[in-house]
Figure 1 (cartoon, rainbow, N blue to C red):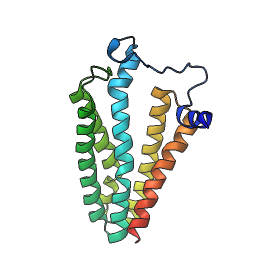
Figure 2: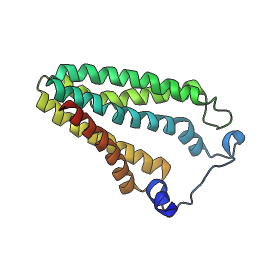
Figure 3: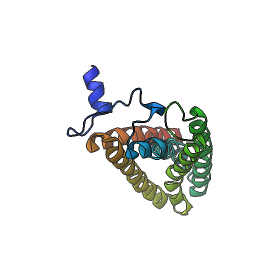
Figure 4: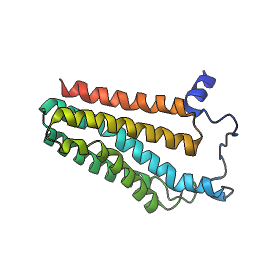
Length: 186
């Protein structure tokens, strides 16, 4: 069972050895790229993932429940702003960066908050269109692109298997999207 979980969640490029980083924390020993990943990429990825996925259900529920692009836009914008503030504070207050080597909390919080807002607002923008059907189709395309970008970042910086990463990210996004659609039709 352990090997199944490792393959699903921790597959790395076969040519690159896995690094646990245990015990390295604030003690140094990281390469410049590892510092960049810890201090910038990881907080940005967390924000992008949260913003892209957590705002799907409210936006699509509002769109389907009300039939109004305007309402879906307002709900999406408020969800993106709320999620950005919440995630920014959560990341900034999670640790001071000394023990983990993850950098200054303010910087991480700002990066996470900004990435969360971007992830949440991009698929909200189509609802500025007055035609709900057109807005929905455009939002579906944007969500697909967002999820592929997340998978590409995981592949590039975390050495995850790209296809597996795409599947993982799409499954998560699809579950939230389906929940929003079902709730919107209730």
